[in-house]
Length: 200
Image (cartoon, rainbow, N blue to C red):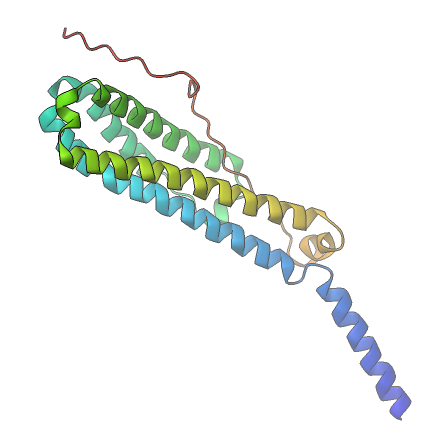
């Protein structure tokens, strides 16, 4: 009877170890890590979107000549905040590409806005603008870090679901699909914006 119990305990231990090695826990843990990192990306984009109205308000009084760029940034912000991605959409490349394109347009508009402000020394003396500009530049850095961290979490998740033995649990138990890394899809992002300071 004791031999029978010992045999049963051995079988249970072997099955438990086999299941543990097959991605039962590692696949959902990696997926949740990627989703958490995506939430960080969204938080930084939201922070940027929240700063823009303040930046525009301060800049409008000092930069009437740049109203077109300010309007473009405001419209790009509306488009960027109108597109949302949640954890369930992280395996949809089209949705991520649309989101990245909207965020890229907003980033381009902000680049042109900041470049035009550098041409106006009187705006640089405005302490409110300088403080907002600093926050916005810090936010752009945070966005870059968040995207890098998200892409690393996606890489780890995608590696987990494709490598043995985790692939067994990923495919059979979880039905795991690869997640899509975030990639900027801004056309002409490698070209510095040109600023025409002549009044029409």
